Length: 511
Image 1: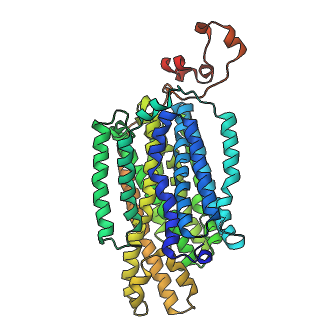
Image 2 (image 1 turned 60 degrees about the vertical axis):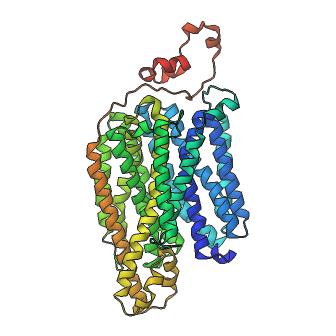
Image 3 (image 1 turned 30 degrees about the vertical axis):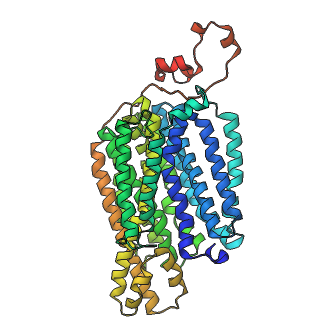
């Protein structure tokens, strides 16, 4: 894209970062709007934004338009992620949710595998614009399926009443502060140094804004954007911490591991995507297996503890990736980490919801997806800081590279093409060695993070999963002829036939 449109490396960087940024910060806002305006309208809004952003980016002739399109697309993407998890909490009893969360994790895994392959194939063999056009048929199919099959209960009220319920002050504080916090996190060390005022001032001001937002939510907001009650539980608090660390670890792998294959092994972007298979292909079966096991046993702590143990062990193995590591070796070194990540996807989702009250289920699901996305954004930034420092330190030790240390160490992705363009020789070999060494420190830090999460998981308490499904926006079934003929006190909601022991009195009344 940068080559065809004549854009800079910085513009290319923001074309990716803008999506991740808006996708993260808008999840709680759209989730909160769904409580007021209804789930289905917000799903349509999210799909429409994703569609509009995809079209804008696909027809763009410069990076300014692409970044605008990607930002809009990110808002829609964040809404799709959040609304998917919220609707599961509305429709599925807690005991059964593990199966559904595992299916979502499997879809994520398939998308993670297919995305880089399709993107690399389009950009190399067709046109980068098809990276965006390919979204349209999926959005069309999804919209049709939602219209036909997603029937939800929702108590309607006047539009003005709904607008009055919106926490406008909280929304402005949250969007402004979280965006102001994440932007310098993403550009630190790339666009501006970490000690530059353009990085430090927004971080400090936005941190103060986030504190003000929390105070507003706790004491002043009549209908908070985010319910602080979802954090006031030891199990919930440690699981949100684990979710943050899970996002950091996962995105560090997905971002930096392909760069190892491209820079050190000389793979094309498509082959680098294929090389991720040991990590990504193990996520889906592990997630499905863990989700089903949780639903059958009604217990989830074993999955949390086992998932973090396997993840920590898997991250420790990646540390052994070297320049000379053979194909067979790196395949087996990467298999274990994917299994751990897959187990954790449904396990942490269930733990968060098991620790939340019935009225907080949708809010807990929203925060789970937001915290994970927040961690993903931090993962790229933290990995970048580690890479820059270690790459520069290693290059200064080589006389051939010392004068280029400050320039080459700034951007791990940009350095890939420099390494590939160099002729075979000592300089190229030393750059590969430095690159591998810098990445090794990223894996070390991620292993430490994983171990911290493993220790934190020891504080996870066991809560019963056989809980009544209490929701105001659950599945709305069609009235049958005999239901219309029967007196109201003789009719039994059809949900009772599906989950007899799990429906509360309040839900029966609503049904």
